[in-house]
Amino acid sequence: MKRFSAVAAGRVQRVGFREHVYRETFNKDISGYVKNLDNGEVEIVAEGSEEDLRALVDRINIIRYPIAVKSFTIKWQEATGEFTSFEIIRGDLQEELFERVDFAGTIMYQTLENSELSLKKQDQMLDKQDQSLQLQHTMLDKQDQMLEKQDRMLDKQDQMLDKQDQMLDKQDQMLDKQDQMLDKQDQMLQVGIETKEEIVGLRKDTRKYLDDEFAEIKKELAAIKGALARAGIQV
Image (cartoon, rainbow, N blue to C red; front, side, top):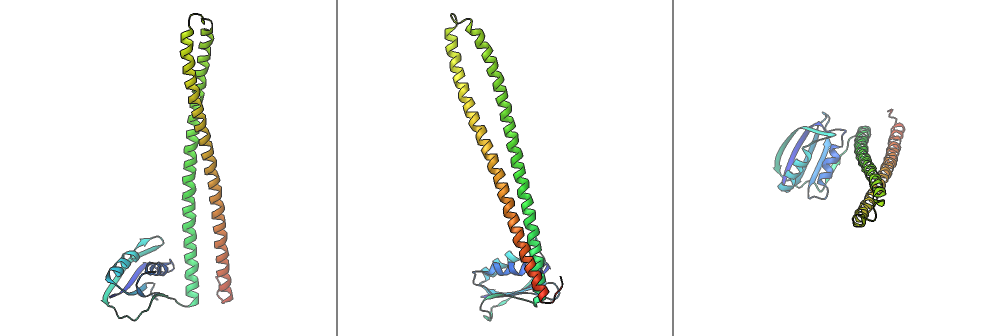
């Protein structure tokens, strides 16, 4: 068994870094603690197998918004067996409440960014769908023009029925094939319309979900603010 003591510096406080470290040790045979230091850094002490500990270092020495570990000093030692589990050592109530408020704001900002990106992608999909529908309409217009020309040809051919019976039989077969093509294109157009409606419905459902999530976050922030006020802390 091994033990390491590490200090992480950078953007590591009030961004959920301690929770990230704790989450990476969950359900693993690693014991120790993580805590904030007064100088803005975070201390991590962990004991376990060397393989698990090295994997843990790789997963917590990260730069991934909102966490940015700019330096990570580490000392390796033999395990002492003094810890029974891994825990987060909390600070005083005011410090923890302010950290949770800051972290909640960061998560809400991330959610907004992800929502905007999702909506932009949906808009792009709808634009492509519109272009596809316009192209299909153009193709149908051209086919209608072709059918009109063919009708005029049939009018002329009707005058020559006695001599052109065999030609009319072949042209009838061509018209049957074209009707089949039109039926298939009508089906494709209907699928395109239904797909667009499904995307529009998904977009509405996404907006409702986001509205519900934002409302829940506002409630939680209001509860935190109330708790701060009852504790005599003005925000």
